[in-house]
Image (cartoon, rainbow, N blue to C red):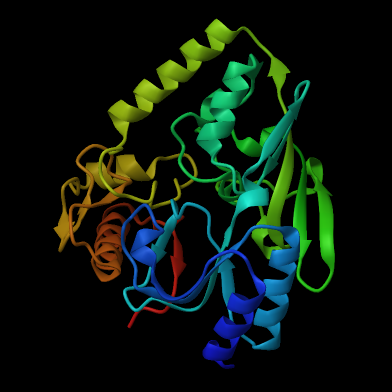
Length: 303
């Protein structure tokens, strides 16, 4: 594999940016991460198909990144290509109660547009960061509602095959999982909403946003919940009960607002976060005999 050759080929053939050694701290909500060997913005399906073909020819690993809201990137960076979905994937349209959305649309934009049209069904998603593609990949939602409940279909780009449509009931929706990333690149989805009272929708959204603001460390760089809630319990409750709120390693700290969040208090490294995760997991395991599993996606290799 020749990174220089890949960069030269893609720079010549794409309209969007193709950058080498791109600092991933610029592309994650943690503001943490070393450089990606290559960062490529794909504005169209044709771009995506071409990029994946070239990366396959050159045997270069790749990953698709939305807003980086559930990702921790290694301090050493990522020795593959990071793909960001651009222009064509940042569009959505509404027909009656059906919304067709590109994977690059921010979830916040979709929530606000649904409200403006008096459509109900996405109120649960207010305040959830990231893109629609990321939300589908991890079945984002609240404790009692998930985006998977609204999905009619998802369109994937399958490398070497092309576009494939998967119906909502055929998707393996789970807690913070969908199985979709293993099947292809999420490029579009169709969501089923319903007509609602705009004032009621607004009140529900306001209440959910205020609740999130009060309970979550929204003002500090973080990547959302760190640990998956064990069955029948809450990871945040277990961590807080162990007296770990405020525990700090370097620039990383267990949030004093919500114990299942690790925040970057300034200058935190991936090593700081990983060390803190290990310490929290160890204490909870020793006290409760429960091994907490992370829901963070880790990118790269940590020395």
